[in-house]
Structure formats: structure tokens, C-alpha cells
Length: 98
Image 1: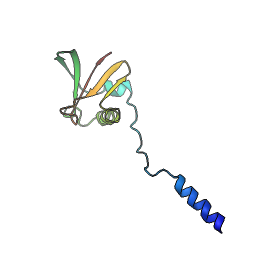
Image 2: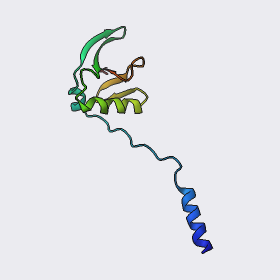
Image 3: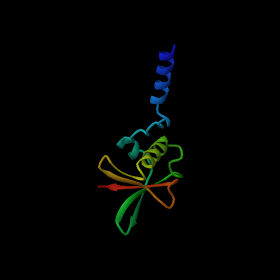
Image 4: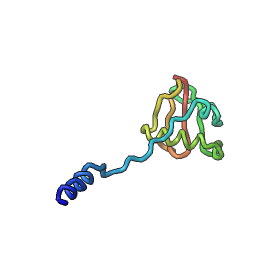
């Protein structure tokens, strides 16, 4: 009995305290290309702007947004540089070829 109680206690101690949240799935190049975008120019050159408004019915927007948030708002992916706009991170994503 005492050994069983000790075994149960050790099993509980060994469990992680915080459950990891599931990681966002990496969006495919096809999903990124399915998003409507507008060409823009900044001081760093031309880029494509993806807005939530233009892509409200496309689940790829939410998938890409979640993936970027998980990677601190910036990620190189499929030969592209993708980022969340820091001043409006909920609604805009930018990207350009690397």
C-alpha cells in the first residue's frame, strides 16, 4: 500500500504543470497565394498587403495569422518574408519575396 501511494505521488509530480497549447499549423504556399493582396510600397521597397477585410471568408488568413503570432510576428516561409503589422497586428499581414 505505501509503495503504491508513493508510486502515485511520483507519477503526479512528474506530470507537466502547464499543458502546452497546440501549435499553429504551417500554412502552405497555395493557402498564402489564395489570399487577396494589394501591392504597396514602403521605404524598404514593394510588398504585398493582406487584410482581414479582404479575406474575411478565407480560413487561410486566420491560419497564417495564428502561425505568425506563434513566431513573434515574423517568419520566412516558402521563399517569402511574412510579418504582422505591429501597429495593427489583428488585421494586416505583409509579405515579399526573400
